[in-house]
Length: 155
Image (cartoon, one colour):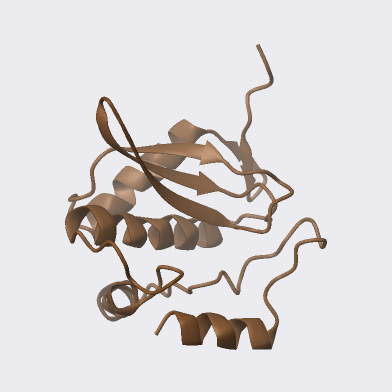
């Protein structure tokens, strides 16, 4: 049996169970408890992505999954931003039934939820994790031209 992977957040080790507790809390706070079950997975510490929402279907039905990158110096605030960001993707896909919301998933429905969260809770959710500090400089944050391209594609 291999080593149990955890995530370091503000000097504390968090497990997938801790992520689930945060998910349940944010689901109740920001989404009226409408989101279904969700599984969590650790993303490679060598990848260039902070997080990922994936919807898988098998014989048991549809399963929502949220991946959390291990290449970031996480704080409680940045982890909350990431989880809520991925939960917006989950909400638009599973509750609203939106299959396509911009090429990278940050189209009108995604942005409307970001505006709602800012208006109602003062919560700022970014599209590309501009506040995240990477551990491995090999995978850098997008350059300005890349951000402009993302913005144009997501319209």
